[in-house]
Length: 122
Image 1: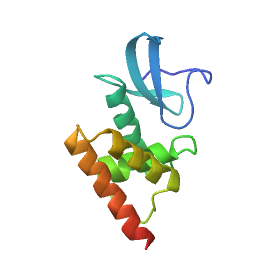
Image 2: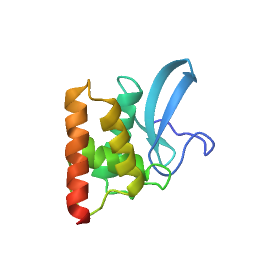
Image 3: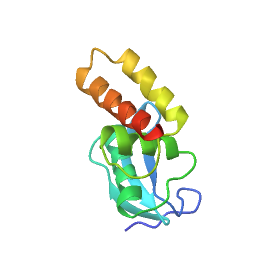
């Protein structure tokens, strides 16, 4: 595995993109200053892979990504646990549901997630 400088990585899993903003040539998930694996796909696959690293290795979600990862965990992957959806995530899910009625499966998933969150709150 390739060793990275501290400037290029972090001790925690992150996405490393090579290239420019308008032309990403390669994506990697890196952690502990090592390339864990290359992503075969785009940014969506990279985010899903990054989420999987945190979830599988039971690493606490970083503050900057916590709401995103909780949303992915509960609303897209339907992984339930004792964590309640933060208000900001509920607001986000409401907005997605409002704007994504044309994408029926995504809207239904978001609505189901929100319904579960509201049930947990009561």
